[in-house]
Length: 360
Image 1 (cartoon, helix red, strand yellow):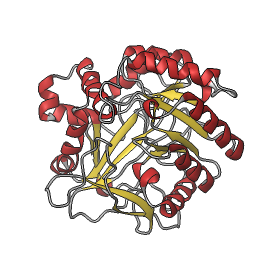
Image 2 (tube, helix red, strand yellow):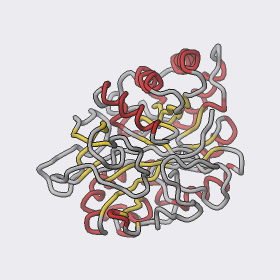
Image 3 (cartoon, one colour):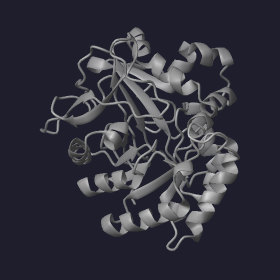
Image 4 (tube, helix red, strand yellow):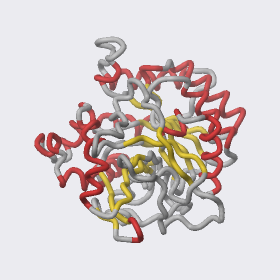
């Protein structure tokens, strides 16, 4: 499995129209994106993985992440074996414990002892016949205990909603070998006011989840930073700017600390980008970005999709100013794949010390 270059993290590839998702996956592969990451907030996860694998030839498909409370180790291992037999070595199993408010929605008190739950799940993957190899799984790790477990029993980590400082700490904790695959949110916009109009409410929804809030508090942010979604916090988590060739701001992306600028399709000691797109109400999605070489093919347009029940994500609301709308990606209008306003991108920089680029 070649885990280098840039990939795309997309809710729409998982929950959007199947035909459009398949077409988008194939075109993303042609554009040079090395991996496609999809979430797990309910539904037939492994069917979605198979759908994307069948639509592509080389691209890795990764779960970002498989919610361990929704699957048994036996089911996950059997699905891994079936997918690998049919499509080769292209499925990376990202595994996470999710968040208590989301897990307990369906069964109060179900979310307990997450570290023990993860260890038990990994034990089950090891004991399955055939097992899921440690080198074909990564963990959603924010705190030191989960980082340590990932280093001992998986190929690396897939942190979500983290800063470059967290990426540096993760690399220091794991050493040079394991993958560090952090998520990076990007807003393509003309300035700070537009960036905050697009991203503030979206970010506030995540900050209500304890695992993310505690992670950011450990990194030195204050409760007031989280409550107000301060400029300091916003800029540490979201790279914004760059529209029309302008300099990107907010975390100094695209040249963030410890990470070279990597256009889509670039390879090297890095991992993959996951992207999820939103645009402010009333804005026509689809914009040109100089980092995406002209492939001679149509790029992408985006269109609204329904909310995913129980996802804990902000609901799309075209009538409420400043609220993001979720879009799915499909071929058509020129512009970055699924990046009308905000994208979620992530990639790995497994060998770079001092903060292997935020998953780019």
